[in-house]
Image 1 (cartoon, rainbow, N blue to C red):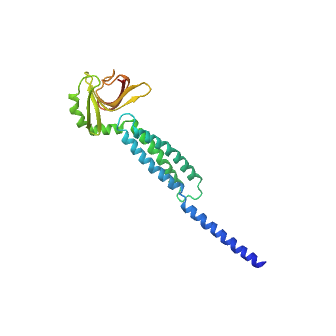
Image 2 (cartoon, rainbow, N blue to C red):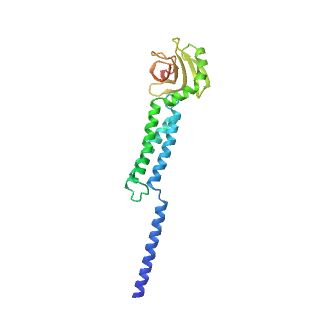
Image 3 (spheres, rainbow, N blue to C red):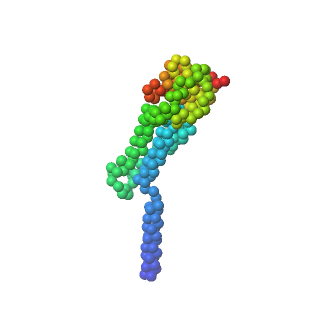
Length: 224
């Protein structure tokens, strides 16, 4: 009887040791919430850089859609990692270190959004391209729908350009077909633009000040 009890105790001790070893290995393999927050912060930084790069172009693009999807996914990842860090009993760093780590992603996102709203990427892109835009101001054709240019001007690909006969010159850097209204929408930059419309249409006409006499614009006209 005593021999059986001794064997049972030995087996039980070995099983407990094995469980402890497995638990320790699982714990080592599990990514800590603090490290997850670090990964989320790094991914947020990359997404912000992509969004800022896309911000130098007027309007939306594929990069804009990708950035918005990434921000949505990172918001969920940040919320989960932050909650896991708050309930983690094995935190190796101090409270304030973790709180600071939790605030990095929101601060980056807010700062990135503010810079895009203030047209800072567009201002930088236009400033870097002004020397290439200036010669085109004098030669812009004053005709409806402008003239095809299809030329790299600074950091922009200008598709068409036109003058409005009132001192305004318009450079189209992108266009797309509005599926709902069946209109052709033109996007780009304008120098000293008119408030009444553009050579590329007057519907849904919008102007956003960029720098000096330069504005970004969007306008549409019925598709031909």
